[in-house]
Amino acid sequence: MSSILNADLHCHSVVSDGTLTPEQLAARASANGVELWALTDHDEIGGQQRAFAAARANGMKYLTGTEISVTFAGETVHIVGLGFDASDPRMAQGLQRTRGGRGQRALEMADGLARVGITGAYEGALKFVGNPELISRTHFARFLVESGACHDTHEVFRKYLTEGKPGFVPHRWASLADAVGWITQCGGVAVIAHPGRYNFTANEEYALFTEFKAHGGRAVEVVTGSHTAAEYVEYAGVAREFGLAASRGSDFHSPDESRIDLGTLPYLPGELTPVWDLLTDRIR
Ligand code: AMP
Ligand code: MN
Ligand code: MN
Ligand code: MN
View (tube, rainbow, N blue to C red):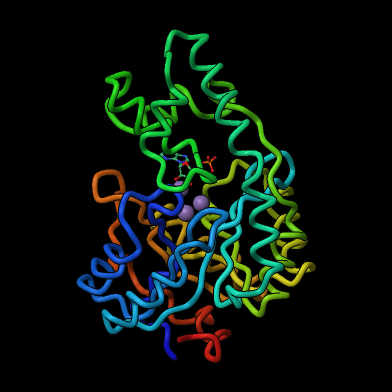
């Protein structure tokens, strides 16, 4: 297939921290012209069957997906998995372990917020949670907007939920080796999500790409809702330098919160190998 394909291979439903159901996302993606779609909920594959059925009902091709939280060099990095066998128990077990710490972390986040006068945040965040195993910072952010503490979720993250702020709790996620291993053992392709978003030094970023490749990772997001146009160019260069295929995905979470809608990003630069060319036998 060519790089001129409306593929959207990164978004979130109520199964993680999105606000739409898999069916609503599929209808929206299709209405926006998406031809190849993947639902990539954080650390979860509970929406995959519904997403596949809804993709088919809307005339879209589908790849299985997830976005795994990883700790690398003391920072959280996201690794997207595409085209894996969602019925393989190794993926389900790995993700379940990764989700395990979220409940306790959320209680500690609420303690931190209570110390600066924001009470009831745990219960408040829970009201926005679709999947009790997947309480995330996003759900706290929605509660703080609802309660009037901030105008929008970006302000919440800036003031309360990022490193050094009262509601931030450092957390240890999966290792890079584990996440890439689960994806590739289950027949999928591992993709470094939105590399432009990490606060790495040049050396740390080089280490991330080098170790990712050594573990069997094969692609990187180049055109994503998290990148500027300059970063499309920058990471197209990095993809070429490391011999990685390129992916494209909006990272859509919600009509009210997401700047970039499903299926509306520019196409991948033509000189790159699209990640879907590595997955032709996994597209359903
Ligand atoms: P968690 O997995 O609980 O640490 O939550 C991470 C999620 O928070 C990401 O997947 C984004 O959806 C969201 N997020 C992270 N940083 C920001 C930000 N600066 N503004 C808005 N949402 C953010
Ligand atoms: Mn998210
Ligand atoms: Mn992410
Ligand atoms: Mn995402």
